[in-house]
Amino acid sequence: MVRCLLALDLGTSSFKAGVVVDSELIAEPIVVPYALDIAGESVTCPLERYIKAALESLRTVAQTARAEGLVPDAIGIASQAQTFVALDDLMRPLGDAIVWTDNRGAAEAAALNDRIAPGEAWCGFAQVSGQQFLPKAAALFKNDNVYKARVKRLLLLNEVTAFALTGVAFGDTTSQGMGGFYDIGRRCFAERAFELTGIDPGLLGPEIGPAGSICHPLTAEVASHLALGQIPVYLCGNDQTCSAAGVLPVDSVGILCNFGTAMVAYSRRSERPVGILPDQIAGIDPLTGRYFLLGVESECGNVIQALADRLFPHDSLEGMLQRLINADATVNSRWAAEVVTLALARRGELPADATSAIRDRIGIAHAVIDRFAGRLNSLLAEMGVISDSGEQIAAGGLAKSDAWISLLSARTGQRFTCVENEQAALIGIAKVLKY
Image (cartoon, rainbow, N blue to C red):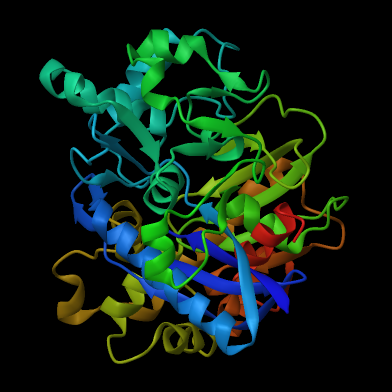
């Protein structure tokens, strides 16, 4: 009887799950897409939509495991950072989950930064970011004491998913360490974070420990629904950190460039990074227990897909990228540059007149690629990780496109070695659990 791990990655646009034996995926992973509710700066998702996707993912891979003659004996979870939900005293959601790409906390972040003295920051950000858990939570309570009184718990997405599976609220230090409430140096919640926001520390009080160190069993009801035993559930950190765990050996000094919803360059550090820049994040690496430094461009894959849908509606994303390889890359249109700025700000949305003449479809698309290529080189340079050989490891949804890698290489001067399986986070979960 061969035992296996069910790995679940709570991504921004879909949940992915796979069966892992000896840090190798068995069969194709399952991908369960879901929609986010976007209205201006607001990006939300009903909690039931998340939980439904998680249960569907796990049930499907449990069936896959049984078909392969395997016996699941644990569930490991990686998750997008920052996304959270407010719960009442009966652990019922008081509203939709607030997604990490939601930017309604920007004003609160600016106000908090005015009150934080230089060098005082405890988390791995140069400044509090509007996409971070802390200012989003503070904004949620602002000027609404009645609502604030009803909130009894604030749980990150991985924590509330674990609660739905096990009936216990618990968390991991890697995920909390990216949210703003947790001191990554002292490895405890930061008193100053609660002082600045007026938030009760008890709202964030799940049992918390290093990634993969705490587990609780499935409830009998969930175990029955999934046709599993009451196997333990572990939280293994943020999805980007687990992707790095999946492709970078423990002692590696290499760089992972992940091209998903966000574009991320990830490296490990033995000491806590200092001098962090605005587009960088430092935190606790789940595989080594030491630190990581990453550079991030929060919009990437979604913008590329949205532009493909609008500019070349009869082509796939790959079809658009292939067009660009075969077309003149010269971009002279000032109008195209303006469109790119708007598209990035609106997550790929183009002005209404863009489809009337599409005066420079190829030029606009090339300008977008140029923008992301330039941003990637900036991220790498700021992290001090552009190697003499110029070779980086690539993962994420866009990395499976040869055309994307070709276009990016031509513009950055970097060479990319793509991981064999795009679901690196699923392998990383297993490695964090030493599975």
